[in-house]
Image (cartoon, rainbow, N blue to C red; front, side):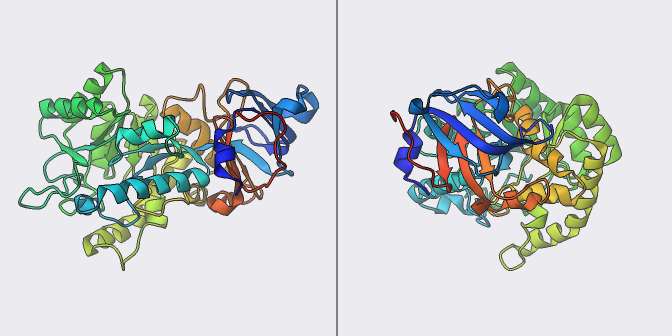
Length: 427
């Protein structure tokens, strides 16, 4: 990898050529393509080399893709970057906060290097990390964070001990009435949350409930959604695994169903009618089961639900649900986020459709599709270059070693291509 300080402070125009372009819209690839970005990190051209505008070599950083594939920067719409894989949130308060901060910064970098230029953290990550990335204090995906998770007493995000001791360092907001749900939303928004996360069902990793258990009542979810609407129209993501809670969440007006393991035809119809996104987090059942490291209750629930999950998400894919990419990283491994694409394809999604799910559709979920998720003139220059042909083998994207170049806001963040030093000024 080239020198970080040079790459990450470069502010010059960018020209990528000799590339195979997959633009994130679902359109057929363009061979011998060129992508141009201005010094502010905005794409000015993405298309065939034959119609690319001329450029001044003295003021452009040139990247020869060598015939490799260039794609939009990917999204992971469901991560928990404040936690190491397999580290129980219930032990968070026992850890040295300095080490937690440094380890979180390392996970941010790993996630970016895996091709994720934008991530949505759904519990445990302070809004300060978003600001740190925005201001250049650390390098990682641009972040949307829910800060904490709304749950009822004894629900999925209530990881307190029976005596009430909270070892999560404040990961959860407990709300047992509609009014309490409103107050909880106000508190997380006061702390800088970009969105609100509610627990509509129990879950796998929580000790006191099961995925089929209902979480917040429909009226409580509706109150949280309304409160989020009142404060700038913030989106609401629902942890929702069992079907009864999924239906409550959809009727309550949430933006996205997270996990969705128990989706039935009625829920799929209702989500489709209301434009609700589904974020399946298949990594949790493909790569997130380890009997040696998991509590037995967690392992038993995971193995019981893995087949159900695959069957129902395969049906959601066939149905044509609005599927965005999310991994629940921390439950599974960090830094191999794009393995999720392989799991979607394994359940019947076309490779190009999986790429669109991880780019354009995810950008639509986060409300940034006017800037991110596709490679076109006027969009922000977030892109990756990969080895291999992801349309022939989607698995190439899941190996970070195959992500040979990552560009974010027009700045080269990762470069394994070892290009010649850029000409012109670096400022």
